Image (cartoon, rainbow, N blue to C red):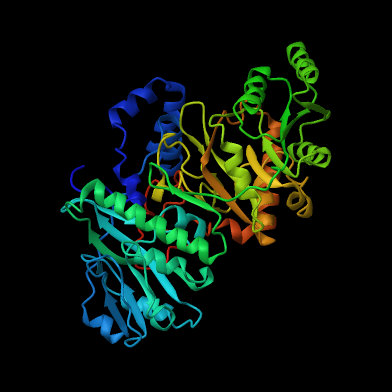
Length: 548
């Protein structure tokens, strides 16, 4: 790729697609898994074949816009709908006079509205509670190149502070923002951060087209933009009374916030259910002991009937060293009941549920998660998990995908930035996996803990949805990275399949409509493939995409 460096929010567009021949060679090494994929594809079962092939060879973005590119909106439509277009002045700031049409459209040079955009904007602003509106866009990374869809999420203050995914096209109610002094170089971001989040709305349709500039100032311009973003975020933290929060730009352009921790630090109870499988348990426990930089912690191993002499000897070794407590939890495996029991006897004010097939990689993972879990408005906090093949295992749970719910960016490479750098940012999600989930003990207790109706599956999803319904947000912390060999300690059986089907039915009965469409996942992305892979088939971007 030549020319100017991509904006930080578009780093995902620079990731090269894996070589098809290489993927086919890798698939050929597993003929037992490849044959069912070929059979499904020949039978016309596109979704099943595509998801299985991604699981085998890895997922990647296939985001080139296949639909028609909309025509541009005539300039006269802005005037007709009471909208004034304003572009940044040479120093990068935006000046909005008190007098003029009721709506102001902020746009960088070269951004053209698509046909029908002004009518859609005006209709949205019929709601008097709306102060700012943003939509989706098609951009070209280079002149003459393919169009890339930027399908933005619902407004999320945490995500926007971390990554400026909002874009340069923002429509504002003049009466609310007139005479506002914005940060040069990050005007739209600064203005949006200063508004009541409830008054900022996403219109899930294409509003603009643009082609990125040819030089743009190179890395110097990128550094200047990052400084401007950081200044806007610091201003917002000061307005919110969080001036003691540290904010700095990480090398990948994501802005990291470090909220102050109480002194002394709260004790964290790390809860690890297991039954034998010392090959998994020992690396897990040792990583919690040696690669987890948190001074006040206890480890509770919930032993669900281990019998292996080597495992029992390891337990004795741990008891003798005082490194852990072993809690006997005999009986059929019941993830919800085991963890609820451990939570009752835990000594920490913060609970960290960790599967026995999870290993800490970066020592600051727990600190990053606890900082978020201690916020009064936050419930469950999840981490970025990497599977045994070096691919994303968990990037937040996305509702309405894969038939019910799936893990975000599943099977993408471990180093992938994610759509809008979402794999590296702290942001709101519908749910996170309990393979690594941190929550304050009091919040967990008040919500009733894990529901016994979901003994093995979906207990984490149900917990997060109940927390969300109680007004507590669920956060994904992309900077907290661990390894997870998912379900390595579970074995399939007819009984397990029947129980799984019953828990799916219970989940649908309880949460029905909420499972159709994730509020944090754009409906214009294909809901049937691995998430963030491709636009929805047949969607033009000019009308609402129906929920799954």
